[in-house]
Length: 267
Image 1 (tube, helix red, strand yellow):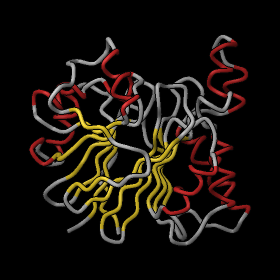
Image 2 (cartoon, one colour):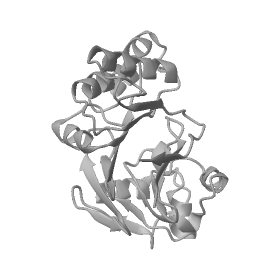
Image 3 (cartoon, one colour):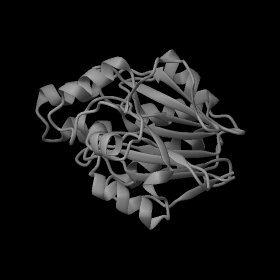
Image 4 (cartoon, rainbow, N blue to C red):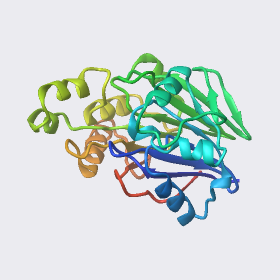
């Protein structure tokens, strides 16, 4: 069966991604409204009954808004680390508390969802806890690395595994510096436990590129301190310095913040 990827939303207003086959799949985060999740999936002929689980990266609102409805009303298991589940329990922004749908996962211990192997790994971010995910299906290795203040050795280890990569390019350094955010917020974003800037993402990917990497999606772009074309060009230029051809050696896409992506059939 084909391996498919869909971004429902990607940005500070909400994050949600789908990975699936022809007849089942999972969600990575659920930080947009339940109604929107249901509609976007339906538009792509994906029913909620096909969603086998939701895997949560961390407990910030833009990643957990609809876990209650998905978990308690529809009986979909919600996987997160124990610390993230505590953060979800304490959040006033979750639409319904988790009880029967709550599932605890441990970092670097693989969870099986039918033919999917899902492994969480540690990433640095200013939440109760935060993880990225490696999702393996047949020969496909897809890595989600979002809300990462810096690319640690552990994050780098997993990125290098991927042949499909969803990675943060949150802000442009100059736009953040010159923008209207208060100083404390600028520091929070850029202090190594906030978000990755375009150049950090671009420089790492270019220096560590391998031809097994087929698809890269730039995610979680800032509304105020970035632009899809700018993020894309920053990575493309870094690749060019290493002789890596976007569109020939690797596919590159900057995901939109509030608009669903195409449904990608991965090869």
